[in-house]
Image 1 (cartoon, rainbow, N blue to C red):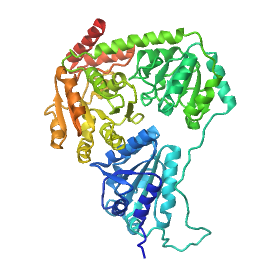
Image 2: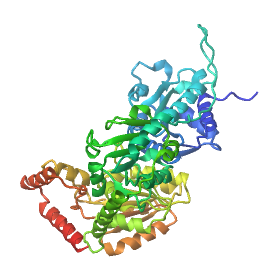
Image 3: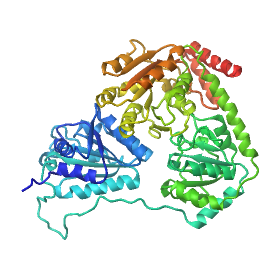
Length: 590
């Protein structure tokens, strides 16, 4: 008689039935039953061993963001599970379907204060849409199905935690006698997304407002991914410029005749101008959180296409919420729109964008020494393939990527958008290199973020993944420098100083390519060498630590606060002032 599979085996087999082919994680004695399940299903589900559970969660998030499929991460009981939390919040806030599976102490000792006893189901109450312990072997298939279905349907986090003894128990066995009118749950690994199309009356109401607008605008977010051509067609019909959220950067190409770039502190001046003067705003697949940059209430009629009804109207008063899929909604809306023959509104913003790009190009100078971070981002943009995937960290590096990394061809762009966590760049790139082995997967990171999870470069080397890491190294927590100064405070506790870590040596020690670049003349060739290298590579670039990530428009109050930080003793005020002056001179020359 064949041996009955254990709960651990049954859980992994059920995930395989759902189409899960990869689990990111780190073993521990709290999940040995689940690890045995992975071993016995190794022909169907790949286990990716990481150095830190936070990286496993980030990898699962990246997998989910890029593919739309479920990302899965695994951690042991107690501290292992705790380490998942940051990555899981990244999934929650950016609406990525992720399942976290954790271990738990044996059921007989729960509540006794046993070694590493942490009730992870309670810890994850806020982050998870579905959050259950599996305490009876008979529960396993049904709870896996419900967890997966919930994560996919609600585009968020599901969490299952499994006691050690339950993991190794025979699957399907109910050790207890039924005392009520119940039977063991029987479910199927099936979920179909609902077709979502707004009502005809709502579509017509939206069209009526857009058709009479004189200064229309479109704000597109990541929810419009896959509908970029429809967004551009809508822009063409309305004569409306397109602004993109940072997460939605890849929805529409940056060289589109309608694109004005991003919005907010990392955005462009034309985008800000448009939001300040538009009389109709069509929001497509975005819940843009920085309301300061959106039209004032009452200024413009707002139509918001949003998949989740609860999110429609949470940022600005919405005249017509269109609850539906972005592509399906635009397909239904377009026949109701009238083509705007007056193109002066669009042309004016095209001219503004031309001037903005010229100003940015001037800052990408190879003549600057120390290396300007704008030049680093532009050089990377030039040498990368047209289908490259850029995974960006949070911080000043996100500013340079937002403005100087261009979405062309089949390029993609990922970062921790709403959580804005440091350190996901490298784990994201590793996950996506697993998924897309034939494409360039580049982690564009700051030195602060890279240092947090740099051990995962060894993970890339161990799996033979040709991930490329480009470090924008200012030897500081660069964004915090400027955030302190814009409050009128001199910087404090934000520069790492000496000795400076040798990240290139770490890369070589892992068997990869490692190079440090300190002069602009060597940069582009070194980047090309790294991209051509067959394995993982690190290019550590020493950039000007005193280059400020200036907002598109500096307000009077920001300028005053900046000056106050100088007067209060900003220690690098001379170097910062010199850099800002060089920027202005360079732009004037351009």
